Image (cartoon, rainbow, N blue to C red; front, side, top):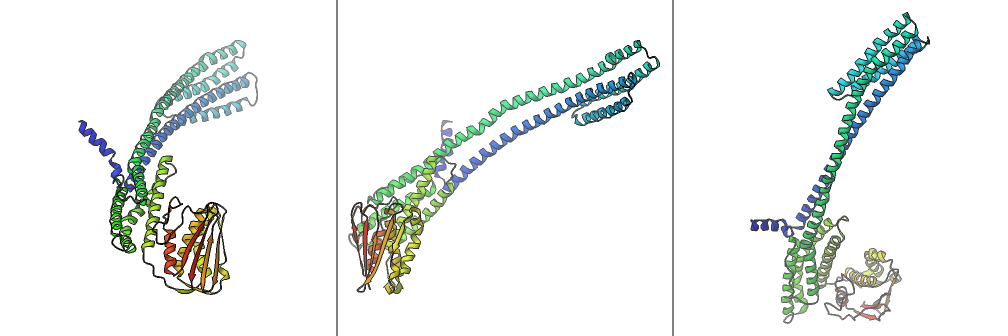
Length: 493
């Protein structure tokens, strides 16, 4: 029995081995079930309250109608006294008006009644009223035939102790019946209020369980594997190719870990091969391997992480999801830059206008410049002669260098790009207002120095060196701490 329970518990928490889409589906289904339960509980409570409220309102209307009938009855009897004793001319007309009003109230009471018990009580009231209406005039006509004080007193006694007393008894029984029903409604409302606390506490309890469960699943399936992957990428980027990523977590992360381990093994093998062969040719073997083993799972992981990203999640989970996206972006940029660097460059030279190339690089970079309100001042339009170069390579090189300058600059800073064409040499000078470079880049180095960007690849400058070399030019860096960086590019024409 103990082993069986242990296996069930393991199966219940084995979701971290599932794909991220399946984890998201389970997560959504749990939340939908919780929402449905909360809505059903609230709807049931509203239904009970509405039903009791309508019933209580109906009883109050019945009691009010009974009081109206009683009031009209007393006023109707008064009109009889006025007609027979005071000889008022309008008394009989008013008497008939009250008769009509009472009949309307009695009909309304019969329409409002919902069960036989109420109908019987209201019918008793109606019968007593009709009995009073039939007997009272006869008493007054008898007095009219014998108009003395003793007969008048007899009429008062007959009406008060006879007809009205019976009517009041019937009316009181009906009112008591309604008050009993009203008490039952109040009792049911009290029970519903007590039960609602227990019913509404269930969604709260389930929400707490879901938060704990989701936290554990996300930690085991996403957060911990991502931390392992980030540590692995940091170790691999520093040259520790023997570092292994635990193949755990969601299926996509396990696949990524496996491929990173395979990539590290392949990189280690390639590094050993560099001793016996040309570095560029050896690294070029990694191009198809990287494209096949890393880029496909990266796209799937990033898309899934974007779907999971929900402002309603807790802060730690949101930070973990953002860590996923940033890590994937970092791997994607690293892979893309590495592929671009390793790909053989074959310049296609054409006579072009320099300003169009510069504007192409700035336009591509404009969104990042707008984020920090950075302005680029350049004078490429002053060069009217066509220059001999490869448009795409020169534009990409300028984009990488201007991107580095913008990321090193503070907000509202300015970057200068000076262009000159003298003695068949095109000179481009980029000056930024950043803190300066902590290292001096060297050509032919895969990693010229530690990157200053949080998610940088460190391949922008090597790529620029390679483009300059392929175009037959040269590039130099002049940087001092706190005084910015000056990059000079010379391209022969």
